[in-house]
Length: 254
Image (tube, rainbow, N blue to C red; front, side):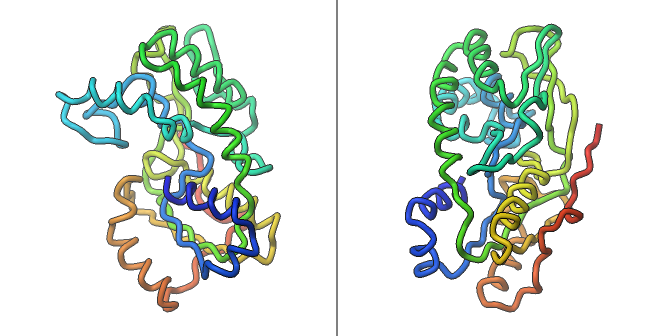
């Protein structure tokens, strides 16, 4: 969440401070807007055979799940409807999870978190953190300095999930996928960048896409990033893609 934390600090200091003290921002796999793919790991527990977020031996899964469920950062990475004043996902009535009798929309994320706490011990903090998390995301203003955004589009990433029972402690099935890095959806990264470009047409935003399938956790250290970042910092990198309505990879894989 480094990019999001840095962005919050930038927003607090304001555009004048940014322009005086920051030459440019290079953000690698930013988590702005969150992702539904994080919810099973938070609700059901990290699993060595399933979770790409925190790989760990199966022996430690129970203890790690109990510990990480208390972290505000996992709730902060739940799918949000807004970053700043603009929508960052599908509409608030977009269904991200369903059971045989219920459907949970992005606008009902709090209800999902409450229902999880009724099924799994140690998850009560989720709903408690949510309002503060939403307040923080709402504070993020359009950056005032050039942005270079590196992200992956090569992995079929879960965007919607379904449970076979009403027990939200069970690991759900994948209902729909979209291109991303296994954690974040590329469409979310692109939509937020597009929002910023629309609000600030003069802002220099360049998108650099890794399309071979590097996962979220590996983006920061992969060859693509390690080769590109020094080029960006020294000014010799080829210009990235401008974010336009027709750019990017927003194809759904049902």
